[in-house]
Image (cartoon, rainbow, N blue to C red; front, side):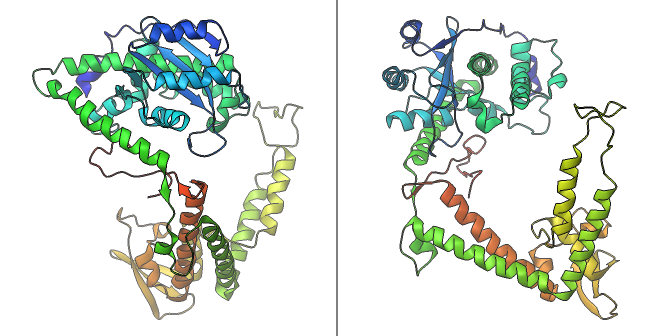
Length: 462
């Protein structure tokens, strides 16, 4: 991949002029006429990354090639229609275009499939190309996709370390979001002058990345290069099309496979989730009611309160919250609120590995012996159980192995924790299904890129 990195420099990638319009402008149809049947990169900015979860709308779309660079506002920041007739026309026009390039064509095609129930022609996808040429983060690879965008858009001399390894336009836009109290999932509410420019540069980056990858593959035309674009067209793009359709059509909930005593609908799944929540509450109460646990948790709470008392903020600061030495501090009200929470918190986070290790070592005496640990009840010399060390071989008791195998050996403690974890994992699974369920079907997006061995996974559920 180091050879590819050198090829970044010859690519001529001038920053486009800012060109933001509304879908209601007279120039809208002229732009589509200019782009029609030609090759171009495009990119959507949407209200959410969950295409099939309402509410969902497209805020803007951008296009870029050698002749056109523009971002078009489709809806306002609240999802209000600007020109519904032209919006429908735009989507129907896009699905007919034969030479579209997108950075994440899986997402862009899913948006169009939702709008038209048609899968667009997928000419090529720059992220899929990148992942095919070299999996990001692999040994001997000296650049990432973000760094490639930096070099292409900012130039050879740009110090991308100044922007956390991101292109400057991405870094600046994220700064704008933070300053205005917006996040990635709410950035569609940003002013179009900011969001539109970010959107326009996204499609420009996609266009120049494609040019770069064309040049890379051409360098190897006598070997694997002659087969690469055929592989992209026949294998990768087919995979993307199939997964876009699967994501759009969704999976039917079949609860009979999961629970024999329930009928097949999502309301029963919600009822089962509520039942699990009650069982988890009972299990948690039983755990914390155990005398040894209650004593240890009380000690932990006192420890947290004592530590928090040492972090009381300086009371002498100006109206902007700046101390005399120039440091910004949290307000005294925030500190007092946290103190009250700690003082009233009689429970313990069983989902925290660090807290669970602390609790285990508070209740038991843990002695390092060779490649493992011997565990004794407090004040008792009789061996309670043995546990192995972590794979890292660390000697710290804080790294005590508390996986399922180890916990099964720890008697009453392990049983209570494992029962809690089992119920929690079931509840997480059910809640994830319900979060992605629409009209009785579950729409789960998969991680298409980097999984060309056909073993797909999902960030939401597997």
